[in-house]
Length: 163
Image 1 (cartoon, rainbow, N blue to C red):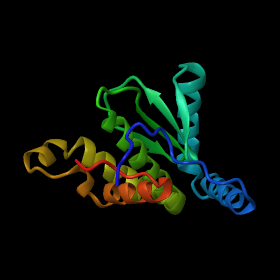
Image 2: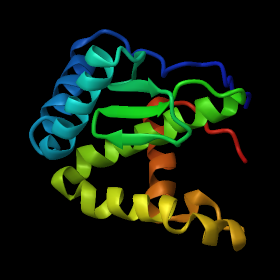
Image 3: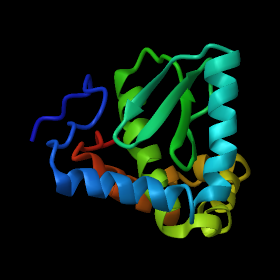
């Protein structure tokens, strides 16, 4: 199977009642059960796009905002924040899929997202980075990161490029 790393977003679903209902349910659950995460993400999104005038795009049911930073991605419910441009196209292709997987984790976990995903992920990324490098352990070895990859691929229909 060939992977097109220039693909910017998942294919749009066919316009019909079933898909419209799925979309409605997705947003309804995100803005009720996932409210604590989406509220923070929505405020950051508005600051970044309306005040700082950062570029953003739709990605499936989420919004990706591109920032001038050297960090990886950050998902806050429906709102994904990631590096604006990188010379390695694989670097911008794969994080979109991965972070979208975190969007779906928020849908399922709601207010538990911070405890089950965000805190362990932040610790694994920021505190354990040198340990992972020293012991040659993939970032995606942590349960919530592997889970985000799996769900990102499932719900986008896009495949990650193997490292």
